[in-house]
Structures are given as structure tokens and as C-alpha cells.
Length: 168
Image 1 (cartoon, rainbow, N blue to C red):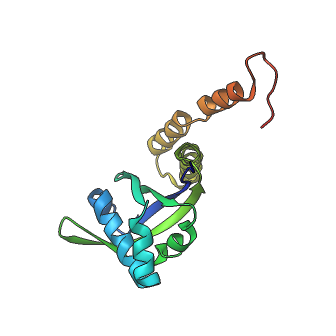
Image 2 (image 1 turned 45 degrees about the horizontal axis):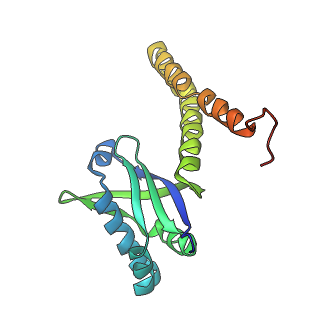
């Protein structure tokens, strides 16, 4: 029996107005990807999307989207992301584009990357804060998404049952 391998693309949906993010949902994103694949690669690309691909996660507040594709075809589908220029949702057209920030083999690696990426983004926001209250809020957010939990889990996974370090 052969296991089907997938690749997960962690993308940001970039919109001009933040209110447009509230309209994001899985089905409209999937439809926009299918249309973009039709433009870029014709019927072959649209057929590849329909087999084993899905929109796994959508965060309408941050604009983060996790897309799942089969490993054999993810590069072809990844190349069609720049052709997504808008998403039709709830009868409205939301102009946007996708910014792919990470490609991972598992959802867990994408989650770990997302924590690090969010922390970096918050640290970049700190110099642009105008008031002391904004700075304190950003500092609190940076501290809340620290990687201590992940570091402890990784250290526990690196050591075997007898305390000896295992080879990765």
C-alpha cells in the first residue's frame, strides 16, 4: 500500500482594505484557485486541483490560508497563485493576491513556522508604533507567542526513553 504525500502551502491573502478579509471562506478561495489554474494551465491544471487538493485552514482575521496539494503537482499549482487577483464572496468581489510564505510537508511544520513568522511580524511592527500603549500591546503579543512550548517539545522528542539522545 502506498501513502499519498501532500504539500501544504501557507499563504497570506493580501487585500487593500482589512474589511475584505472578513469575507474569506474556504469555498470562494477554492473557486478562485480553480479559475486561476484554468487561466494558467488550462483544463489540465483545473483537473489537478480537483484531485486531492483542498483549502485546509482559513483565518479571516489575519488573512492566513493553508492550502493542501498532492506532492507530485504542488509546483504546477503553486505557479498559478499569482493569477489569483480577486475572490468572489457573498456576492462581492474582493481584490487580493496570495503571498506564499512557507511550503511544508506536514500541517505541524506549517504551524511552527506560522508562530515564528507571526512573532517576526510583531517585532517589525514595534518601531512603527506611535503611542506607548500601542508599544505595550505589541510587546505583550510578542511575549504571548514565544516558542518555549515548542522548544520543550522538541527537546523531549530528541531524547529517547533511556535518556540517550536519538539520531534524527
